[in-house]
Image 1 (cartoon, one colour):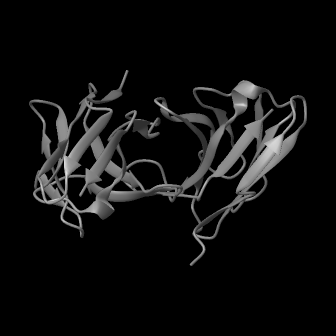
Image 2 (cartoon, one colour; image 1 turned 135 degrees about the horizontal axis):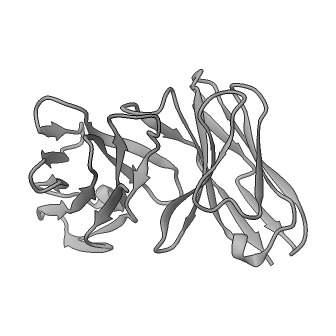
Length: 115
Length: 113
């Protein structure tokens, strides 16, 4: 069975510091990988995704994630965070084969950016 | 663009009352989902509809029913609310399952007293 593990439930960081939110997955078949962000009192929205091709993907607001097949990881990074990046971040996967392609979610990582 | 619209945004119910959460999307998506979000438990899938005319149970279906009324609308019903159903409920839609983006509503914060 597929699963997603987000290794940190909470990550406190100071403004302008770098951050890494870790995500590992387990699957016997190839997957598509996603990071979603949830700002306070809002729904989730897609931050970035890996489907194929270059293993490094970027978002418009400075986040990037790298797909590492050998380590089955898809860690999210930002070199310098802002207060406005404070949010809950969810890693998710979906299978790249078969009929069951529902999203499998991690439990989320709460990023708190402090001044 | 409205995207995914959920109503109501907030609701307080007494134990044993029933209610229906409404969800509508205007993106012509095939698949729709209902999740609940609880602290420390992430998103848990309640029910989903892969396409119009089909519904299937997710991880936590007990105490809920759904109706895919048409391609746009997917409602979630609590027949007899319990305090354990206090949660934030999210509706989501995807054009098709697989490599495409899920769009979420703003959520319904439900409290059962």
